Length: 339
Picture 1 (tube, rainbow, N blue to C red):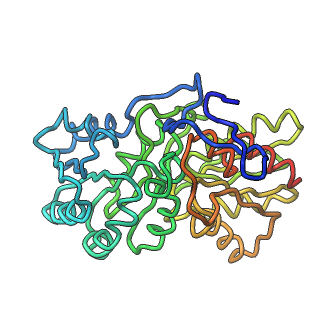
Picture 2: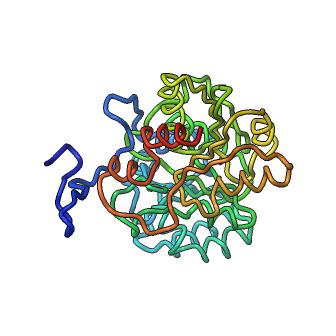
Picture 3: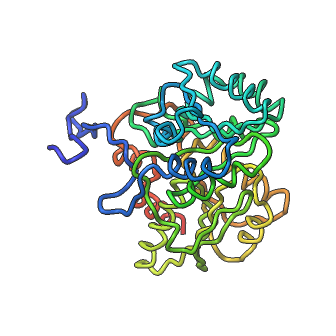
């Protein structure tokens, strides 16, 4: 039996087994509002005002939306080839000369292949390099080689590094000039291509280091970042049908963490706190929030939605998001089981 994304086959024990039939790369639901290449377009607008802005990539301009910048400013665009170590070393040198490089690649290549070069040449030297990396968490169906499930944990642990996990196109557009205004290295997870647009409905404005309460509710508090804020908002609307009132606190800056806003929101008695993130449950937002609450001696009922501590499967994203519990339906089911 086949559906648009899935195929039912029979396993060795004769039981149905779900497999996948397509590699779906878009995180936008059918009919969802989107904006094209928000990062590339925002960087172009910024570069028109600031001549210190340059764009750099490791053969991935088209796949990180930096091709938009390259077309507008070819003399300020550096394509370094498939050599991430060289890419980040060169970015450090360019920053040392007073420029502000925005550097793109896939999150797996920055977090794994070039981690030491970022650590030693950018973070330790406190160079003004802005790193924007596509395919964060489970936004690729191509398996462990391209799924950066642990990037937040790695960059969170790096001294001098600011870490951002934006939710949608609006936030990416607003984060780009904020990154440029911040003095020092920044790592931002990047959503690319046709990126969903959701935060404009909430009058949202990105502020570096600040969490924002998008909606309130007396029964459940979602503390979320990135793609999972979008899912938390969808889940909150669906949970209303079960008379479950859910609040959503969006935490786009993972480091520095807005501990004050998180602790204040979690102090409210009688509601379940659910941290939701598109990242392994090891070392990301969930553990950061739990640690902050422990230090503040605030002890709400607490649950964590995140990716398991394992190498993830390849396949179509809708199937994978259901399998690993980060789809809207899976979140709703989990919340109802915890209450």
